[in-house]
Length: 390
Image (cartoon, rainbow, N blue to C red; front, side, top):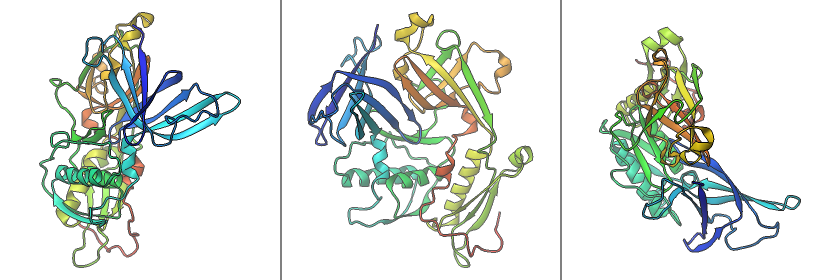
């Protein structure tokens, strides 16, 4: 069965504007610790088209109808929900290029604050409880909040209370800080329904977040990469205080240092309220970054095009970042790479395939270096204490 794409446009007040009929759509990416990435649509309208549907910040919903959706309640599945962030018009080619962004990006556009416009927010609680409080503040203050959550979608870590002061930070920066204080294997994600989740990675195949991929049935090629570049097995942390209240401490992993040599990161954060919280940050950082990153990239063929590829294919719309999967049909000598219950970090969705990037559960999430360094408004390292503790 041939896939059918439906694109509907709404204004900022949720009023339906138009269904786009003449367009080109290639795909988009979606990733853990974020959400739906940039999506480009080429609209088949003239250069000077000025309909009410073509307005910056309008909401765009993309749905798919295929053989898997036949018989479902709505006969389609929502795969993308975002807003128009950019419009490029071309006279020569007579086309309009529209760039969409997922609503999770709005979290980077507003300052984390209370209803009383206070931008300094001290908190002592479980990270999951902190996360829920943050989302409630965002939904309360945003002009047209699209994001939503439940007590079950944002889970408590049960790892103890952290004490931290969020000070002049965006909501996104605050979430990234919460993630840095969370146990290993926790992640957050915003799906196409704009549901915000925060949970540990699944550890069992007995879940609706599980996929089984077979070589020669669902895919033909696979690319595996092992890298030491992002290994950090030593963290020197300072809370910016000298004397009373000073926390200047080194966290490290002896086994990793023996194997990969010492690879040190330094972090200064004056918002950390006590040593227990510093320990949560330091220990979580080392746990997440002490091992070489092992990533596996696989092209999963869509089941609606299986006959053309001589494969059975797979329902690629069912694959989400944060899901776990196993690969079958390979030599057992590759077991050091193809471990059980590998987590899907990123999905590049295309109409005919999904390019997934997975990582062994034990290796931890590869956190981007820029996120590691996101200690907004950090004070400089000048004046640090002479000696640190371990």
